[in-house]
Every structure is written in C-alpha cells, then in structure tokens.
Image (cartoon, rainbow, N blue to C red; front, top):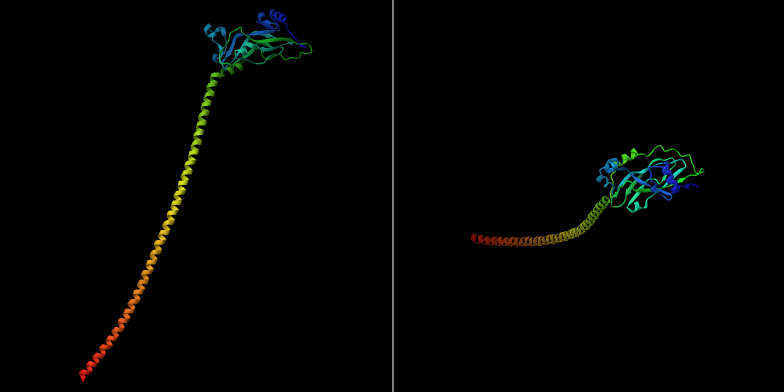
Amino acid sequence: MASILSEEQLKKEINDKNLIQSADVNCAEGIKYDFRLSNRILKSSLGGPINLQELPALERSKVAVDPGEVVFVLTEERINLSADVMITLSPKRKLSHEGVQILGGLCVDPLYQGHLLIGLYNFSSAPFLLKPGRKLIAGVFQRLTDVEKMEFDIPDTIIDDFPDELVNLIKNYQPVGTKDLVLKVDELSKELRLMKSLMDDEQKWRTNFEGYLEEHSKQIGDLLHGLRQEKDIREKSLKEERDSRNSQLTDMKRELDNERISLKAIFKVNNILLGIALIGVGIILRELWSMLIN
C-alpha cells in the first residue's frame, strides 16, 4: 500500500530540492503541501502570457479573474517526481468561498516534471484578485510500493510555461461574465414577453376577425334573404299585374265581340227594314204608275 509523505519528509524533500523546487517549507503542513500562485499568468485581456512583476505596481494590483472568466496560472513550485511518487491534489476551501473553482486534473502521475498548470474560473459576481504567493491547491505526496509501481511513460511535455495551444485558445477567448449573462437573460425575457404580446395580439386579432366575419356573414345572409323576399314579392306583383291585364284584355275582347254581334244584328235589321221599305216604295210607285196610266 502506498505511503503518504509526512511533514518532516516533505520538508526534507524541499530542502534537498528533490521532488519540489522553489518551494517554501512553511507551506508543508501535516501530510500536504500548499502550492502557491506564481507571477506567470495567462489572461485573455492581456493578450498572452505575462509576468506580473513586469507590470507597474498599480496595474499589477488590479489584475484579477473577472466574473465569468477563466484565467490560467502556473504554480511557483516546480516538481520533479520520481517513478515511485504521485500527488493527489485538492483545491483550497477558501477559493470556493470566494467564488473560484479550480479547473484541471487532480492527480499528478509519477515522472511528471514542471510547474502545475491550473485554471481559475470565477463563478461569483466580484473580481478575484491574483496575488502571487497565494495558496491555491494542496498536494498529498504518496510513495508507491514495489507492487504498485508501473512502467510509467516519461511525459512528452515538461510544463515550464503555458502550452502554445492553450495560449492560442486564450487569445481568442471571450469571457462571459455574470453581468453579461443577466443582460442576455433580460434581453431574452423581453423578447419572450414581446413574442407573447404579439401572439396575444394576433390571437385577439384572429378572434375579433372571426367575430367580424361571423357578423358580416350574418349580415350577408340577412341581405340575401331580404333580396330573395324582394324577388318573390316582385315576381308575385308582376304575376298579379299580368293576370289583371290579361283579365282586362279578356273583358275588352268579350265586349268587342258583343258589340260586333250587336252591330251585325243592327245591320241585319236595317237591311230587312231597307228591303221592306224598298218593297213598299215599289208598290207605291207601281200603284201610282197604274193610276197614271188609267
């Protein structure tokens, strides 16, 4: 079973500069060593890796991990693990109390060489000032037994500075702060309220429009019904007027027929009377002629 290095063993390793270099014996407490923040940081707004000592004192005092931002740092200590030693890491509790979360692996394999590369994510609403020498993460050194030893591969990279791919990533990194998130949420809320208002207005418009259509349909139906009634009334009136005129024409024809019959009878009577008159005149003339002869 692996054995944990005690405080005395850690201090000896520090003094001998074997496992830990640039270390402080005061950071060895109990069974752990507290790794500290160095001057080497990688922050997007600064354009690339910088050494805080190269900044003016006033500017250096203001360098921080802003809310919603991730900043990478290197530890002051440099480790040089042998094949039988590994480290288990645990973030300092005070960091979480200040709204900072450690990003990265929490186990350092044997044969690792270089500084510890740590990501700091600020999930609070206040800046987290970067002060070199501050304790960030605790490490428990464990020495493996012969049974636990493995043929560990020597790491390809020795972390003495920030890797190029990480530097390129941070150059294009745009932190999203909690304030920005709140603004985005507010904007989305306003857009949602606007969309809901538009939908409500559209629904109201549709309801009103359907009401207007129903009312207009009823009015059109009433108008068509009135037109049909008017058509029926007019057709009935025209039929009655036509029937009346036909009846009048029939009566006039009947009267004309009666008058024609009457005229025929009168003509016939007149002809008879005229004949009788002519006969009487002939008789009279004959009598007078006889008288004249005699």
